[in-house]
Image (cartoon, rainbow, N blue to C red):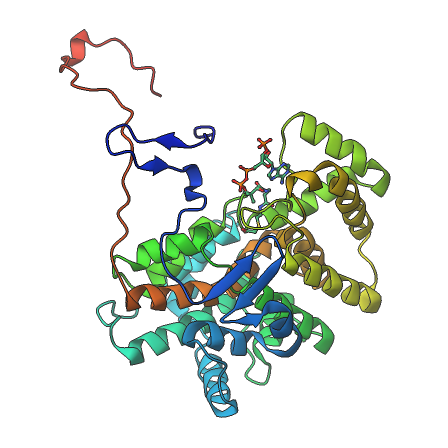
Length: 396
Ligand code: CMC
């Protein structure tokens, strides 16, 4: 593991304050998403996420995030039709995926295949609005197809082709589960995508903006963000939550598990957030969606464990402002929808592509390459030692 996080350190020479993890340091201006971590509110382009999750669709929300306003019915129809037209991926990409190790993580497969799209489309046109529109359409359209394809390819099967008569979310579930989803399941999944579409300057979005600031192509921007999202402190936490709930096993064990974890300074997965000091508003909605699904298709027994854990944690972690985040209930929803556990984070990526692309466009609109500074803490002025005179290095 890397260095332990440390508190504020003052730069010796210039007096600039170093804040580990850039906590509270603005690195850009943005008009895309606003979070009030004390009130627990989240808006995309000024619209509360609750309203979008209730009334919008993922593609409409994507349009809003990327182009700033809700589309007219005509604009939405055109956007949906374009996305539908570009859902298929080249046989070359599918063949490449067949060479990936079947045991590899689907996030690594997604990162590689997203980057590979850049091989097909010129990178020198990012200031051309037509190229930008087409790149947005391609990425929104093809990422779900690639996620579903790897799920079948790793089992030695051929991927299922997208179905033009199915809307975005229903088509993804169809390609993934190999059967047409129930309309309620498809709508709930679409609402999950809305909830995960954007969340201001988290680690992966920061990655996207840093990469965008070099003026590289949007496929590299998305690939770098996918790599960042994969880590267990970020998007990867949703997988770990289910493993943790299963380890706890029953609601009665929740308190004991928490005590042990807190005493040994282990993080509770799906809890805590840099921005929120209350329960994440997305976790509130996701919990409701989980209950809707359970009422229709039967309860997941881990739900009672999750609720018990949340209840017990309120007493122990609540005073520090640590409450369930978006990843706490999403895994239970995804499992009920038939999504395998190691695809939870790729599903998060399908949705977050919308936010990354919104930030890509915004970054290009007022670009300056990111180049922060550092505080050098290494050795000074060492003398060269010939190989035969050197003591062994303690490094490796
Ligand atoms: N369980 C127990 N204690 C926690 C947790 C947790 N999940 N999260 C934070 N704390 C404690 C931490 O131990 C520290 O305590 P102390 O000051 O006594 O040493 C204090 O709270 C501050 O923690 P931090 O790690 O410095 O906080 P951060 O803002 O750097 O990290 C976080 C935020 C999300 C990485 C962290 O809360 C965490 O690791 N949570 C678990 C992983 C998780 O659920 N990640 C998903 C995040 S939301 C979706 C996404 O972004 O992808």
